[in-house]
Each structure stands twice: as C-alpha cells, then as structure tokens.
Amino acid sequence: MEPTLDSLLRQYESGRITRRDLMASLAFVVASCAAASDSDSLYRARELNHVTIRVSDLKHSKNFYQHLLGLTVMQEDDQICYLRSGTGFVCLVQTDRGTPPGFDHLCFGIEGFDRSVGMAKLSTTGLTLRHDPGDPETVYVLDPDNNSVQLEPTGYSG
Image 1: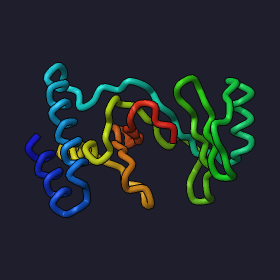
Image 2 (image 1 turned 180 degrees about the horizontal axis):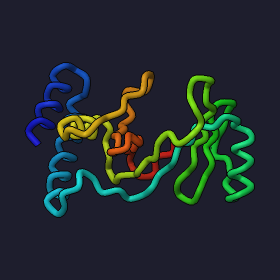
Image 3 (image 1 turned 90 degrees about the vertical axis):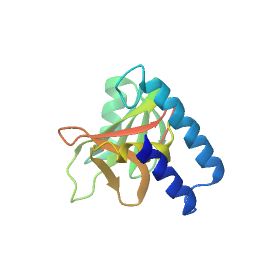
C-alpha cells in the first residue's frame, strides 16, 4: 500500500491530480484495502463489460454478429462498431494493413474503479501493463499469455 500512497502524493505534488482527486483516491485505496482483507484478489470483477475484436471487413463482421446473435448497434463509424449484448457489448475495430484480425482485449467492469488509482496500484504489483499510444489513461494488464485485460468502472460504454 505504501508505494500506492507515494505514487498518489507524487501525482498530487506534481499537479497531475487535484486535491479532490487525491482525497477520492485515498478513500478508494482505504476501501480497497478493507475489501482485500477478505480475499487475495486485487479487484472484484462485477461484469464482463466488453470484448474488442480486430476485423478485416467491418461491415461484413457487423452483419455476421447481428445475424448470428441479434446484437444491435450502439454506435458506429467507418472504423469501429459497438454492438449491444445485454449489459455489455462487442466492439469491432477495422484493422489497418499492418495489424492482423483477431482478439484485441476483454474488459471487466469493477465497481468504483478509478483509472489513476488503478494504474498506480497495478504499477506496484509486478504485473505487465499495456500502454496504447494516444490512450495513456486506459488501464490494461497482460495475462500470462500476453492477452490484454482492460479494467473499467461497471457500466462503462466505450
């Protein structure tokens, strides 16, 4: 817990987070520590929020998932399509020529999850984190097979 507190204080002192963010993060850390005493897990997933799949033909893939599973479009453009599935969704992303189609990541919803606190907490665990250029805020952890696991608050909708 000490490295997490040090990280939060450094972020506050450098102006990267506000006093309000610091206080909310400290409350979350205390609550997380209390919850962690009940188990050895870092977080408690409340939902499988979404799965993101890289596709070679966005329109064809969208039609496939709609026909097979009856998924409805939440939002879309020429590069990405979000398809609703119950309380979660499937995200289809058009690949570029250098990126092969396939699984990109899955995302779990965690009640009360805060990205800055989560990143600080995870950076002290020795787990491998994935950083995406252009999206430094999103929290990804690599599993033992290098599959990406995204962490977000419950109800996250992209």
